[in-house]
Length: 426
Image 1 (spheres, rainbow, N blue to C red):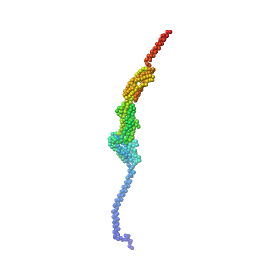
Image 2: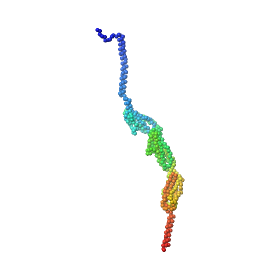
Image 3: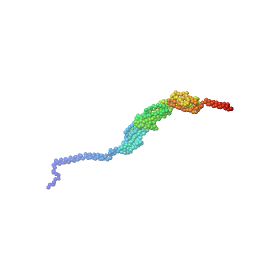
C-alpha cells in the first residue's frame, strides 16, 4: 500500500505562484504598517500619562478660589478741598476665613491716613467669605496741601498671598461742594440797653460731615460790647458737626455798651471747617436811650422850712443815657393841706447825653403846718424815662408866732402883777 499523502492534492504551478504572491503581500503590509502603529500608540500613552499627572497634582477650581485674596473699593478716586477729609470704603474678598494684615503707603508729609473698623484704628482684620469686614480708609488733607493728585497704596497680605489697592486723592480748591451761612433778619434796630439776637442757618452742601468753629467780631465803635456766636442746639459747645447736605442753626447775641451813641454798628460772623468757610454780615442800629437821674448838688435830700414861709431847694436833672432827652418836665407832690411847690424851670426842652440841668424848687409849707417832718416827692419825666426822689422837709414854727406868744405871756404876767399890786394891800 502506498503511504497516504500529507500535502494534499498536488497543485498546479500557477496556483502555487498566487499563494506565494499573497504571502509576500501580507509580509509587505506588516512591514509597512507596524512603524506607524508604534508612533500613534506611543503618543496616546504619553497623553494619557500627562492627563493623569495633571489630574493628580493640579488644584481644582474650588481649590483655586479658596486660595484667592482681593482688596478693592467702589470709588478709588475722589476730589476734596485743602483741609478736608476723604473716606474710602475698603472691601476684602476671600474664599476662606483668614487673617489679613494691612498697610498704607505713599502718604505725603503732613497728611494723615488710617484704616478704621469697628470704631478702632486697625492694622489687620479677620475676613471670611460670607462676612467681609467693615473697613474704611480715612485720609485727612492739610490746609496747606497743594492742588494735584496723590496716590496712596493699601496692601493686604495673608500668608503667601498679597493684594494691592491704589486710591487717588485730588486736591482742588473748588472740589467737594460749598458751605453757606445765612440769616432772614441780618439787621436789627433798638436802644443800647437791649440785647439783640440773630438766628442764622449754616448749610453744609458737601458730601462729607464737617466740624465747624464759630467766631463773631464787631466793627468800629463796638468796644465794650458783648458779642457771642453759638450752635443753636448746643449753647455751651465751642464746635459742632453738620452732616452732608444738612443744615444747623446758629445763634448770635449782641449786647451793646450802655453808653453806645446812636449809630449803625457792623458785626461779622464766620463758620470755619478746614478749607471750608462761610461768613454772614450783621448790623445793629442803635437809636439811643434816655436815662434820667434826679438828685441834688450835694446829694442831700433834706431841708428845713417854716410854716407859711418859702424855702428854695436846688435839684439836678441829669441824662445818663445815649440819646438826647426831649421835653423833660419837672413836677412835685407836696403834703396836702395848703402846701405849694413851684419851679424856676418847669420843662427842659432838650437834655443831651451826660448833660445836667439845675432846677430851683420853691417849697412853701402851709401857714398852719405844725412843726415836724414832711415828705415832698419830686419827679423828672420824659417820653422815654422818668426818675423821682423824696425830700424830707422839717417844718419849724414861725418866729412871728414866737414873738406873739412871748408878748402874750408878757401881757399875762404884767396883768397879774397889776392885780397883785392894786388889790394885794387890801
